[in-house]
Length: 234
Image 1: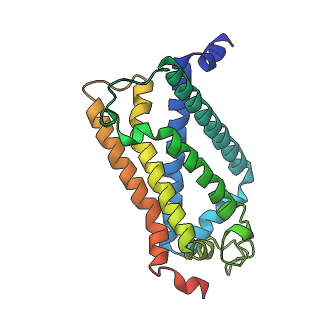
Image 2: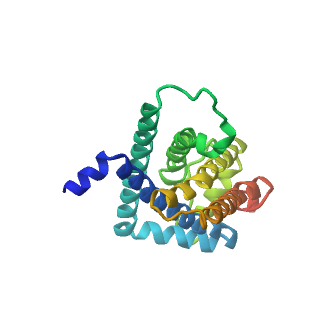
């Protein structure tokens, strides 16, 4: 019990919490992307995938609660570590050069807040399917395919045909991947898995992964805006 208490009280412990929860959230981001990309395999595949998730509530809800705990701990630890760093340096550097730290590292807290706001909207948009915020005038809950399953394909096409929604999505993904480009390397650093030999390789790999994730996520709203799947909403 003392170990857990010290983990939450010490500065190093908070960094461990931020690293571990960040790693868990990163795995979710990758898994969620792989699920979303089934959109390009057509209505049957993505609707079957959506039906599988909804039909296994005993798996879905524990996963959701686990993600909520991970996100809450990640935000809490990030805020605490940031506050402690500022308290340790109450007087700004007399000769501060922002180029020493990357833009991603300097905006981690801000990008995290915007990402959290987007996640709330995204959940209301495609998970809760709140009609008043989808800007289409139709209820996504009522969408059904020929098998009687929720028509995830039509929902995604209809949702991303709204330029404002797609624009917000692309912006959020850009900030998420900016966050990841620094966060992945910081995670290895906090866990003690980064040294002078592997450090540069880890940083380059983090940036490459962030770019791949960004391109994967934004490919869907961009494809829809360019006309992909428009026959589904006629």
